[in-house]
Image (cartoon, rainbow, N blue to C red; front, side, top):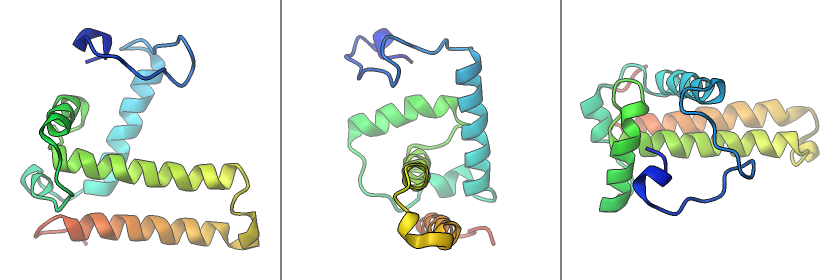
Length: 136
């Protein structure tokens, strides 16, 4: 649901006065990217395993919000799984922004190595937080 439909105050969008159409190309691209990201991070985990993931306690309002957002996720991602994927997205986004704005230049030719290492640690952390049956 959009913030206006929920009668809540929304933060300003990244592009002032712009709201992507619900079924427009931008929203469709975000959904495709989210589904790909979810499959790559969680392939082999069941919804029950993701629901039992070891994440910091989620406040009831945040858990409720994540549950509403999960209807857009592939396979109805549980709140704990959605919390993991949002954290991973933030980490990945941060790594890309550091690179794009030249904040990893001091690494010289080793920027790709720190990126691969960071992503590997992020995925390993997610797999350690998700109980039994973690994918290989």
